Image 1 (cartoon, rainbow, N blue to C red):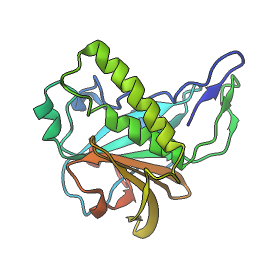
Image 2 (image 1 turned 60 degrees about the vertical axis):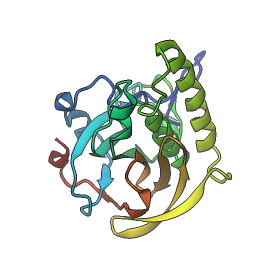
Image 3 (image 1 turned 120 degrees about the horizontal axis):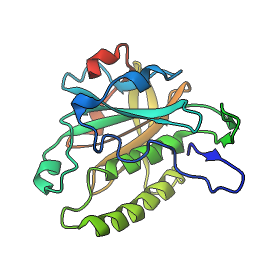
Image 4 (image 1 turned 90 degrees about the horizontal axis):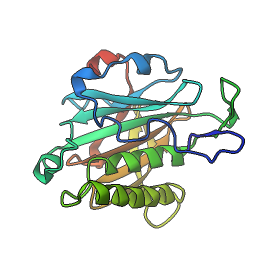
Length: 222
């Protein structure tokens, strides 16, 4: 996963990996961070004709953009009412910069290499943001989320394990292989284009009929 290692500090999850749109109304999100990325953003291809919306980007300690997400369908709510969450049909595409381990731009540490596991973890933890059990209070929700996020991390680190199957989906019109898993919360998948790593998660929309493409104009998500 994308981290910045500093002397005397423990590696931390990538900045921006908290619930990607929690607390940020759709109308208040802008493309500014996305436009600073040196890599292409991905979303569902033109076969998807529903609503599209921006989420947030994640940055390293030096401020460089490392990953981000684009939303498709009915934007899920983080409100505790189960009915509000369950009726939202959505798919989120996570784009992660592909690079080897390198020094951070500000010279303060080392950025870990990214891989398909990075995309799998970001997608898995992203899905959890919208699927926590409604009967949990705030304290128990935190404990549940910590536990489930750790499970998502372990699953992402074992893409060859029994929890995952393979799924072929088009990316820019070319079939590519993805790691895929389902749970009671929804589905998660992860793969790579070579230029970037892709993750996706969703509920109420079948992953089997999806296709991905580089976003030609972020205005479609405004």
